[in-house]
Image 1 (tube, rainbow, N blue to C red):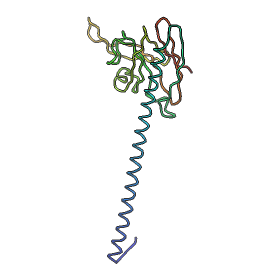
Image 2: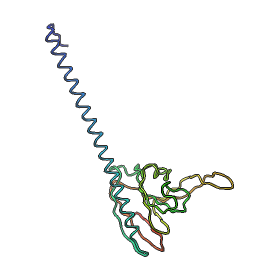
Image 3: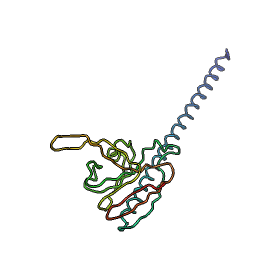
Image 4: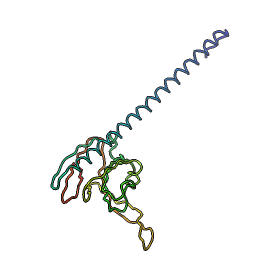
Length: 192
């Protein structure tokens, strides 16, 4: 313990300690702001990549003639090493499906969504980007999940029904999707 009998020396020491504490607090605040801004930039980049992925899927699907097949390489939307817990996915609905993102009723749509895969429609309504695909029907192969949904039954009221909603999960690296059109049906299939 430093003991100073001089009032000026004590004030000088107190001022130095106060300056040191304020400097440390200032540096910590700057670090917090930098980390926050980096997160904003990273999130914005992921959303741009999701938009790019949807643009690619929609344009290629709508440009296909019957009997054609085309490949699409999509950027990864997940953090490196986070593939198993990544919540980004591609989903598709047909105009006659029971549940479909609200804005796209009576349309065939392809969506790039972020959310829990136990409720795909909600995930796509809240944090999803969807586009209409001009085809008789949409099919998505690979990564099928069975999900409980509420269905309206006119005779008995609301019932719970188990339906299969296929998805393609994103990864941290590029994914390759094969898009084909046969008999008016546009199919999306993850390769590899």
